[in-house]
Length: 99
Image 1 (cartoon, rainbow, N blue to C red):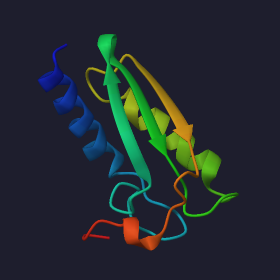
Image 2 (image 1 turned 90 degrees about the vertical axis):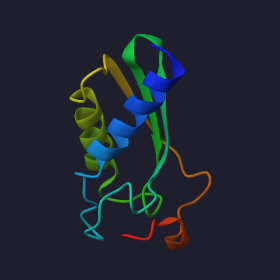
Image 3 (image 1 turned 120 degrees about the vertical axis):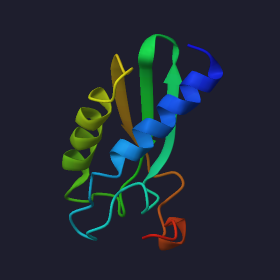
Image 4 (image 1 turned 45 degrees about the vertical axis):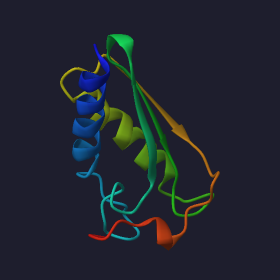
């Protein structure tokens, strides 16, 4: 998989992740800025780094599981790992315009 294919797959993954809505805010996690990074490696290995709106968010497990399940269903993905981080802490300034 070349760099262009990896970039295209990362974009497909971000598009798919727009289906996941934060249950507290009611907007998708990509437009909210909760997805910090999508890395595609050789062999269709994908690593997603994300956060939640607050540390200890009651929806953390739900969102992490939903992201993993969503990414695994994108064509070209063989393995998905989802990592939660709180560095940097999320703020409303991280939201994209549509949110």
